[in-house]
Image (tube, rainbow, N blue to C red; front, top):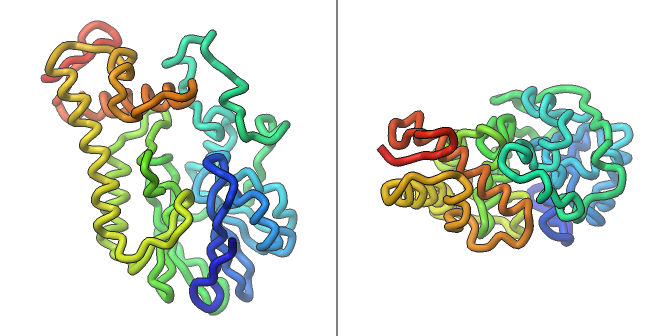
Length: 295
């Protein structure tokens, strides 16, 4: 579905599930699209006629349609430009071998919803975007906001004329936030969400909720506070007894269910990132290798 918001701005809502994502179209003097994961809906933006494609970050559901933008200049944050070269990072399974037994690596489940040959695809990148940069498409101008946490180079975008922010994977879904890349600091995502709250746009749209969220501050605060609540649940467990990442993951402190191996991996990965943060804050310590306790 293509939803018009302002004179030249359109939101492309995907209709195909979690391995796809919403996109933005600016149909101005310069035709520009943000993200390419809208699946069948992507045809409505006529990707072969787009001048610039920007990816919010490197994950597959945001870059899966890049190949259709044959004449566009493709832009990414500098950190993402490095990350997109890694298949593991693109598929959000970076660090799998450190947290999952090798014989549990169910490749078919990891690749569910993935197009054939995409895991060996060379992702073209032509240039970079940076925090505070203003993109001028003609009558439409918008600002790049570096919002790390979901990934280290993740970016959101603010359209001042429409007072609308596209938040990418600050996704506001019921199962979010996700910060499962290896050694990602959950505090960075907290700071990024706080930045959007301080910006105080009249409305936001994200990659995985098919609606515009008006007056988003309360929603953003609740979403941010989930990170802190997860951290408190981890600390509570560590106060009761020293535990490993595997033992903590069995308590379902982040996800209520682990319907697939990737979801279990993401729980472990986010717990690991919380533990690294807690150790830095002096709230936890590592005893024997891989065993943590609260301080």
